[in-house]
Length: 454
Image 1 (cartoon, rainbow, N blue to C red):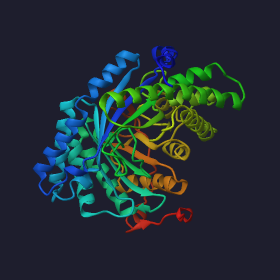
Image 2 (image 1 turned 90 degrees about the vertical axis):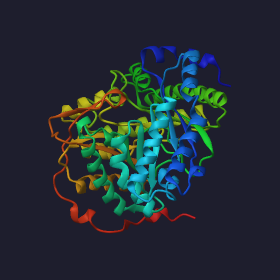
Image 3 (image 1 turned 30 degrees about the vertical axis):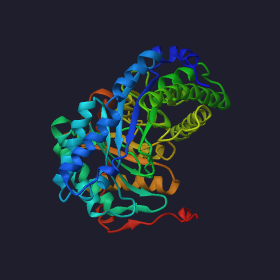
Image 4 (image 1 turned 60 degrees about the horizontal axis):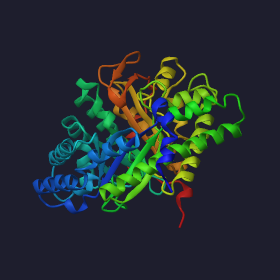
């Protein structure tokens, strides 16, 4: 039984340690909005989202006031739009019209972001998928709240290298079209391997085709809480360290469980999952990097970093699954650069490189996240970075992702500012040796041998 007492005992976490419910995300199926006419599809999409989510922001604010728990974002995720628009979108411009319709209704209901301008192409691309992908740069340039994601691979199917190549080009084009705003369009675009259907976090949220008509997913975050707890056991053995992280994650997850249950009841929408992710913000003291330092590293990137992150990620998940029967999404630890002041400091100190971040993604929750690179980085090099990350996810049967920003007009030594939760990022150097001949091969990388299970 979850009661208010369990939240009251976390007041110190909320007031002093940056504990928050990062997002309430309502997933909405738009499959029944598909038609052969773009205008009709746009109107149906707007109406369905409005009808389901018109009270989402108000409800989130009411719950926040009543329980004293900050709820930072209210978001919506929808069925991948490449599926919704397949019957009516004959051109890339048609897809952009749907993106604008999504943005309009997102603005009308007052949510922070809307995810699902997406395509699932892990094995191959339909004509509809390719049109949507090619429309992404213009769609993200013309909208403010729409987020886009593309799933490029999976453990079961391998990696679609044609799509990897296309996404490298798409990211560069998106950066150019939003260059006046620090290439911020790329901050709303993520590529996945093994993308989950129930992720409440942007930019990768979409309402998977295995989901019901509508669902409430909640993302909880508390790196500051974990860091403070670890200060009390400084110098203790690994068993004490692990137990402390696990117990703290349990308490944080219980807060999310309470909020999710209330939101589900008040909105009349089934509860889906709790995503317990240590998702940092630019606020001082709200940093995954600081946790790694408290564990014993001078900076993230030092020898031992991958082991420390593996320990942290595992104990967070163990604590979460004790607290809720429905832990899902990307639960664990996020390591974005721009959103974590400790990670930024590590980059500036020379301790953290893209190559070390890639190694860390083998054991964390997501992947190369919010990394700014020189604006003249080639599309092929970006595709190569994506391919490396997709391979980690495919072989290890885990979700991995890339959200990378080639900041137009910027080079190593510069920084780019996005504002809000997205923060700012130093421009990180990229290996300049070419991979064009590899990326330009056609087809897909086959699934690993251990994928053959039946």
